[in-house]
Length: 183
Picture 1 (cartoon, rainbow, N blue to C red):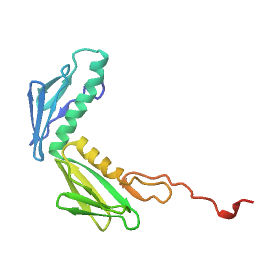
Picture 2: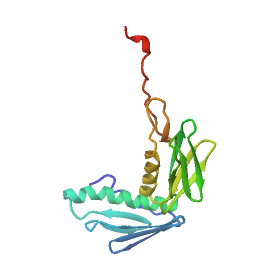
Picture 3: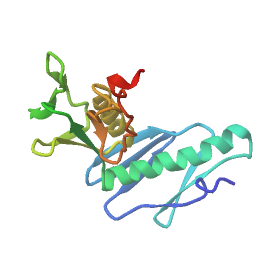
Picture 4: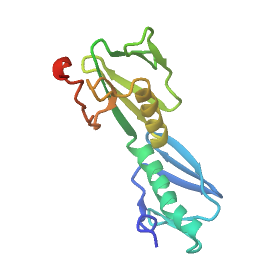
């Protein structure tokens, strides 16, 4: 039995869970999410807890058991607390500003990079610290938006310049040795 798959998901106060056939809907104070349940998995609601049940011990069912439980858990967390990722911009002249709901990034290119906010995603910008906080209720969309912003100028290993996650540590490399070292 999957260790993760057999764990119950506690439904916090203020969150609603509905199962309409293969469509699962979770509603909370921050919004609503829905997801199509794989045809082999079954979801049961008991005493304020959601349980995912697999029909057999087949390879496909075992692999979908933990994944299904985790995705439902992320939906419940998203509509009650939300998700966020923080990005830091490091480099001389690199900066970010918020224009409406969209980001305008100045990353050392000859032009600013405009990044429109995807649906369900909000940005917070602290221009003094050069940080961007990507917020939303869908964990996958938050991670994807943060990865796309990072991809405009990934951190480089020599000076550490670029866009990086706040928890990311860059392994620095030594530059070229002194020119007179040949000899």
